[in-house]
Image 1 (spheres, rainbow, N blue to C red):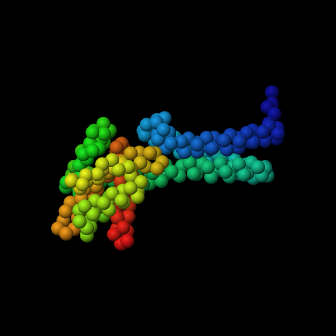
Image 2: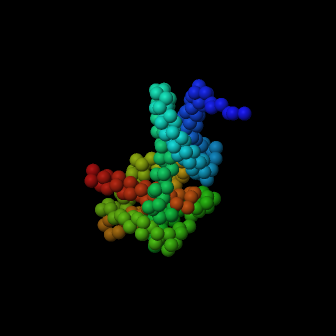
Image 3: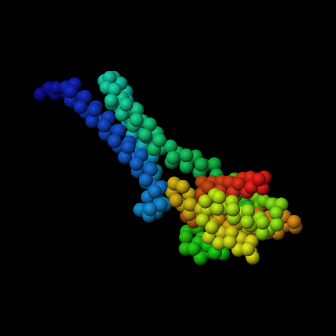
Amino acid sequence: MELQPASASSVNRFGVAGVEAVFWLSIAAAVMAALTGPGNRLGWWNFGMAFTLLRWAAITGGVLAACALVALFWSLRQRRTPLVARSIIAVLIGLLTIGLPMQLVRRGQVVPPIHDISTDTQNPPAFVALASMRSGVPNGVDHGGPAVAAAQHEGYPDITSLTLSAKPEDALAQCLAVARALGWEVVATSQTDLRIEATDTTPFFAFKDDIIIRITPAGPASRVDLRSVSRVGRSDLGTNARRIREFYRLLARMQKD
């Protein structure tokens, strides 16, 4: 019995169905990637599951982008303009889906795998008001010690203490204004101890990072030290260092004004 070749119409139906499947699956992968952060924020899953879902969404998006290229070539040969458009959209969606995870991977490769950044690694500012809360999170209150300090100095040599030409009480007020301008949730301010404690929330995954600002009198001036610590995760992908740099930039701008 001789097998008959498939008819052109059945091949075309199969091709159209394939293009449609790639198109809608690409959208589904992109939606999953987009929901990983809000899902963590809303408590649908924890940060570990969020990263797992993001990783699988990225892998799926990459595979579908390759499939969409095949679909694009087929659609061009068939001269079907609507399918060509869907294939192009699927390619772009797939590439966008792997964009965020690839950016996170690249960032993680160029920064030290630490989550506790302090401008004073010899005597890191200690949490007081936030100490009880941090004792219940994975990263706790303790500094990582010499190993973390060495990694920080190698990866972020610019993160050091800052001296302000202002009296301690004025420096505290300026630091408080900057913290609020950056949108941090100020938890405690101590005029006596010249200390500010605050919490910042990352925009996409809604991770909570805690900050302490310590003012130390330095003759007629004031020394400002910051410590920014993530509550979860081994590496912060450079977030805490960027936060301290942004704080210093805004504080310097305030000094000029």
